[in-house]
Length: 287
Length: 287
Image (tube, rainbow over all chains, first blue to last red; front, side):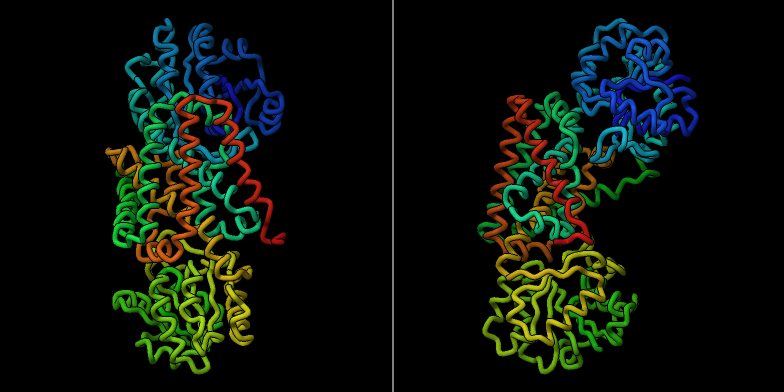
């Protein structure tokens, strides 16, 4: 099968690696408007060939859009315009605005809105790694709007990547993604901004980072090219969860300021419950 | 050397393991008011003997207080009252209120205020692991107030644990600990509270956690017994940095709400700078 991957960054590049290793694809065509990324992707063997978009669409059996979500919104209608037999998917972290863009497109059924819940804080083809998707969750949205053949192809893709597949509608997806994933990135960005403002001595940041800061701030290295469009497209949900977050933080602050020991203890015990949720479900006991 | 460790949790237990393995101690006495912890510590071989506090002080060459910081404040004066030749240290995450408590104690010089910047989100003797302190920073505070012999003993201890030693005064320590370490725990607790309130479907939390939530929320499992007293003792610094954090988060929220794309991008780029700070300094290039 020929797979065309549009966008040779962390996600597109890592997917290319796995699809080649697992022999899902026998030919991978890369498309990237950044010539440097294309060069690295060829050199690292992520893709076999680099082509212009039109040719890459025509040659493909499966097309994966792995660019920021504002780019997906722009390019997806064009890709569907040129689709004959191809299955088209994307890996964007928002779904609602993207599916809205092609809701009435005559080729809508060839497209499967997809979100692999996998990534690192790094970006670009140099960040691509084997096994990035393994044992992670993949979400297919609005499955009723995609044709059988396309759904089967993306299901096969997730099996090859060793992902666990779940289904949601696009609206739900964006809500839950804001509630769990997008807010995590925002708390990390805000933490980085805070520490950079308060702690003027960089050496202190480095020295004290192993006290937990390193883990909570990890995501603050994430790319603006990817995340700004996510926050923009999903801003209603994102702003709602940020408001709740600010309320919780303000409550915590007020209780600490008034040295309300029992209330602070109670809040920490409540927060501790998250661990139960994260360990209650397991890969094998997923329902 | 006989080492008495008061408090057989994650930190005390892990220290016991290393001090035994590296033959720094040939006899480790444990003290814990929780009989279950004492039993586990004996069974796991973290300590050789369990004794009452008075006897454990008398028998020791080195005494390590590894209990929550409110407990340290209470017990440290009592330990110093009974000190004859022993070196005394603690591993608390705050320092100023603790050193104030014993500022005029006749045995103050036997005591070395210490803070190893190491830990995990788990607690109790079952969480104790070998090598917890390796390649982490250890902070000695107010060194001028401790006698030479005691400082040398704690320096040896950090070398045996493979830590990198730095020096601060207690007031500075608490400020910088709030700015980098304590705030990280608070952002994690607030994130957990937010997600537990917004996301009523626990399965969604589990399914979407690999999108970065798991790493940013890790510290939310941390123990209230340990952290409430830290926030209480260090509340002026903690509240100050929380205020800055809430400002940053509110700014972020307002910019996202008004879809100010360029400003959001700029904020993310600013936050990205933290990565440079964390990678600029390395273990070997520490100054």
